[in-house]
Length: 204
Image 1 (tube, rainbow, N blue to C red):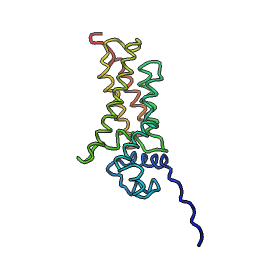
Image 2: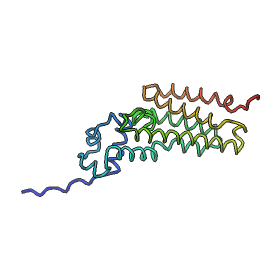
Image 3: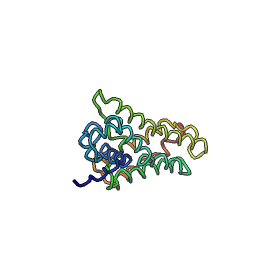
Image 4: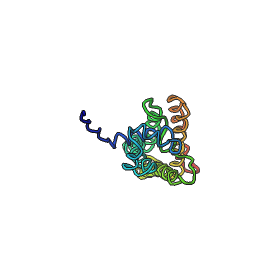
């Protein structure tokens, strides 16, 4: 009898990345265990052994997204010399990522679990908190801009952050719906055209 070859080693990181793309493309509830195991090249027992459950796998996929594709806003806001340039860069760079033909369209954090059944409320809450964290990130950069003098004193950083975070999330939905990169970049420019009005102190 011919000797059996050694089984191929399980590449957990590669499997997790493939799962992330499936969740990103189809959403949490629409993704089945069969979808996941076929994409990951494993059987259900191996999935449970490695990740505990579908939700456990999803949570790790969200964390992976946050370390990879999800770094765009944080990097753009942190590296720009002014808050306005940071917001502009965050919106533009995300649009480019949202419309990358090599990846699912839009943002996984925005799209993967907008609506969930009650038993999956924890998944929806996870992503809602991640979206709130993005808004806080915008607010912190705006407050830094106020402190450094490139954002007018008296600017309502909370409202301004909410506005641009809402634009960002809307761009993700539009990208998912097939709106072109050029059209979405036009929306970014329109949103930035409102900057002076939104940062103007009352009565100025």
